[in-house]
Length: 454
Image (cartoon, rainbow, N blue to C red; front, side, top):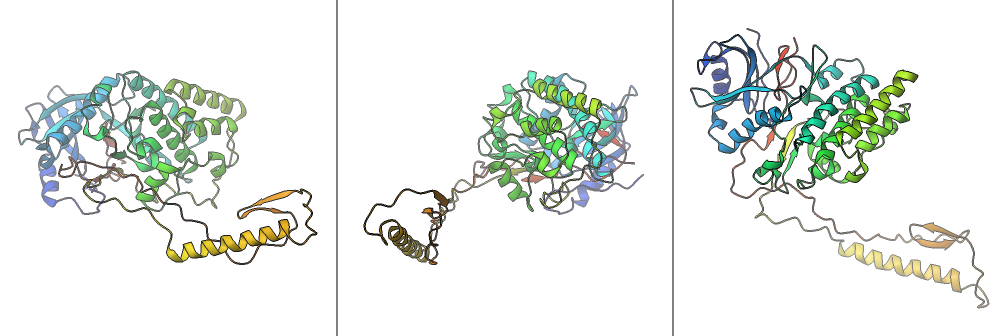
């Protein structure tokens, strides 16, 4: 049997050897007298994925929650929800779940359709430039938006769309993976993860309202932002925000609008840039309002490219320093804060800064008064052109103000919002979970386990 790399959680500690041995030991066994486990496809922090065969000859991908998590009701519920939500989409682009059950040892499992191909992020990584062609990326987005339109019509919002959750089969069909974070209308009042203050998802592809944990605002337009962020990354090879750490990336997702894509990829046709930039609008009302509307924009851009041809030798601007997808782990995260802990006090100016500010203000005021009222016979000076400066307004050509520096007041900094869960309530899953297994065999399940490359 081929040796497979083992995925581990974001704390970089390897998985328990006992878990790995238990996963490997299941090969050859039969679950509930119906599914034979043929081989291991991958091992993650929450589950293992196997290739299996039903007693009727049907092949499938068996995703089994680790025994340690199977005893946790919340972990079980979230694990099973992925299958229930995906099946409710009712579209070929959503991976269907064929079965779910509990193994003899108590481990919960679901059986998904078996996919052969690779994830879209793996496809881009294999290119010499680390990017997809513009038309190629748009055609994938067209398929994705068709699936999202069906999901949104059912009140299902995915909430974790990104290139590694998009799977391109050998037949060229795009499949949307990992509906485990998805929200259905009827689940909103019961799902703990939808509570305001919990930031769940992948920061690099997370719209501001989701980064802030304002789940009551997250809707179909939030998914469209993630589609735009995926297009941005696939076309440029960069993430929409530049940040060296996951926390800084999350902060920028909360507070900053992405740069227009043509500042990173000059020469991109305006018809294409308009689609990406509109989907990435910070203001939700300025984005496409539904998947069909964005799909129409994508198809219009494809038609323009088919008629005029795709620009050749597009090279991203290096000087902007935008982060490449591999520079920051694109992990699905849950941030938590103990509500009993005191919040950080707002930053206040020091005593020395306040004294300097007062002196600077007095000196500057005296200088301005001298030039306005002094140095003349008392006549009111004629109005003249005024040039704005950071210190105020002064007449053009007037001598520079005193060299005494003016110190700008330091505005109180509102503590950044962090995701909050009730103190004392144990999290259903590790606080940070990796979202993809490293490269493995070529067959992949409709689950959150990266590429199974041969």
